[in-house]
Image 1 (tube, rainbow, N blue to C red):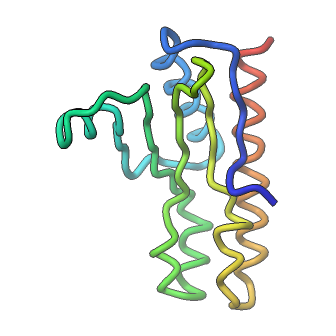
Image 2 (cartoon, rainbow, N blue to C red):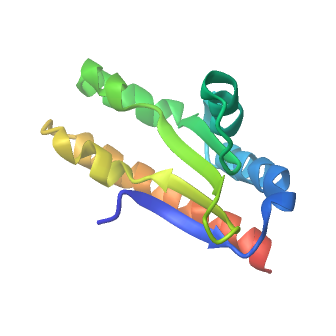
Amino acid sequence: MSLVISVELDLDQSRFEEIEAVTRKILAEHGFGILTEIDAQATLKKKIDVDIRPYKILGACNPPFAHKAIELIPEIGALLPCNVIIYENKKGKITVSAMNPDVAMSVVKIDGIEAIASSVTEILSNVIRKVEKYFTE
C-alpha cells in the first residue's frame, strides 16, 4: 500500500495554476473544502532563502467523514486534514498526490476508523483519477 494516491501529468509548471484550480474544483465536487494552503516554494524562499520547484500543500477536509472520525476518537485530529500536494517533480512534470487515508489511519486501532479511512481513500482515488482524466482527454 502506497503512502500517496498519485498521478504524474505530462505538463510543466506553465500549467501549475490551472492544475491547482482544477484539483480544487474536483475536490469540492467530492465534498472537500480546503482548510489550509501552504505554498512551500514561497515559504522556503522567505524563511531560509532557498529555491525549490513549485510545491503546494492543500489541507482538504470532508466534513461528514471528519465528524464521524472525531466522534470515534478525538485525537484523530492529529492526522487531519487530508493533505493533497501539487508539485513540479524532478522530471519537470507536475505531480498531484493525495495522502492515502488507509495508510495514515492504519495506526489507529479503533472500531469504525478503518471503514471511514477506506471510504475517504476511495473518494480521493476518484479525485486523482478525475484530475488525470481532465488533463489527458
